[in-house]
Image 1 (cartoon, helix red, strand yellow):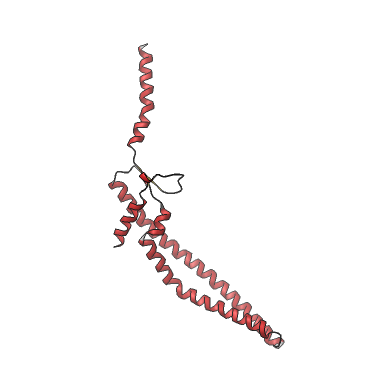
Image 2 (cartoon, rainbow, N blue to C red):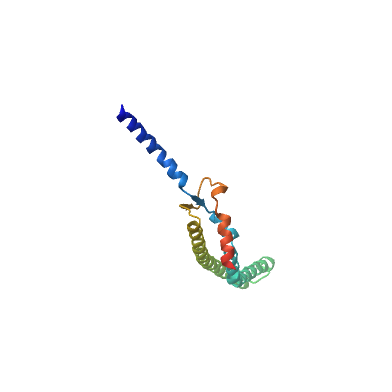
Length: 169
């Protein structure tokens, strides 16, 4: 009888232990999407990329406009052009389109590389801030998306944004 009572007490303690441990665990959640959208560092990165790639984008737009002008000329005057002139213009349009496509693809690749570098730098800053906050506020675990649900009580996103604003100043 005494053994049964001891065994039941052991089971009760074993069942309650995870509940007590979970009650002591402090968990936080950070919405990285919101941070990438709202942080001053993300805004600065967007402006840097825009400035860095605006000239090349303008050049590409000029090439596109030139192609459109040539196509318009061909359509408007093609019937009265000599066969040689029409053929030259068609070849020039084709070459310009190839060059435009090549430059467009190159710009897209270069932009993606730079954007990934900027995002990587931002993620390092965010990780440092989150780690600092987690340590100073005694968090045991901090998660990011994808999560199915995170209550406002554990959402640290605004705190992280606040710290990022302080770092930016």
